[in-house]
Length: 336
Image (cartoon, rainbow, N blue to C red; front, top):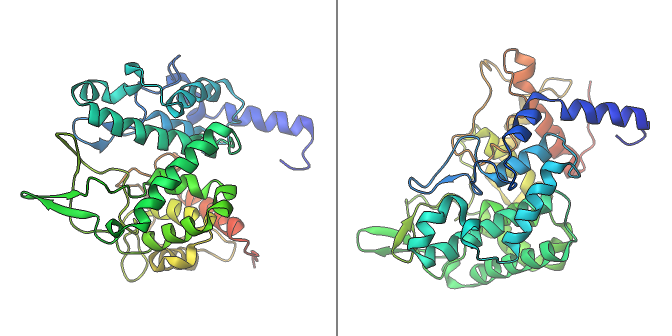
């Protein structure tokens, strides 16, 4: 919108707010600032991500759709997120984990930590980078992850307990939230360059293939957001199993200045760029439907264009993400 007249800005803002996806999202928001009284988007019983759920995901999706963060929908949720950052232990702030947390204080404490990570990431994406509460929370999270990365547990985070493989109880690995948080906070990257270097080196490793659980108190929790290596899975030709997640992760790595650390990310990106036509439009063969995310970890950002009835609309999201990645990487784009 740089250089646009006030009238053009107003017209563009109106177009954004009138998008069907935006209208539906705002309509579903509750007065307490949540979507569905759910923060992380997780089914607390099955330990799986739900479709189109989670206040953090919905909040971040509004940002991705271009809604100004000054809008009322953000202000409602900001108040809630800052309560989470303040370590307010009110029972109602457990939301989807209220019942489970009541039965297990250890689980309640663990869940509150996960919610603080997620809320910090969302607020950072909303541009509230220099708020002392966000900076303080971000540095505490970075310190916890950094301590893990410096320890011997970073090399062997999993142990056997009976017949199960579990995460070591003292391990504090990075999560999709803590990594995205660091990627969204350039000042934190500069202030903690050593941490970022250790983090990206850890994430360049092949992910653990063994299934494991996180034991919290007497409860075993399925890991949804934890990362024990590179989250991108792709074949030798660069075809990812989860294209939306791969695109999101490539963007995160570029923001961290660490694309070079991941061979898988480079291979996937090279494949996607090869599939672009001379105008820079992603145009793979036989694209019959919108790419979906099996993990659902990138659903907040993909797809932004839900109408996949035409090839052009099915191509739009990946084309946009590739353009954004190129801009963040500082590439000079040339079209023929």
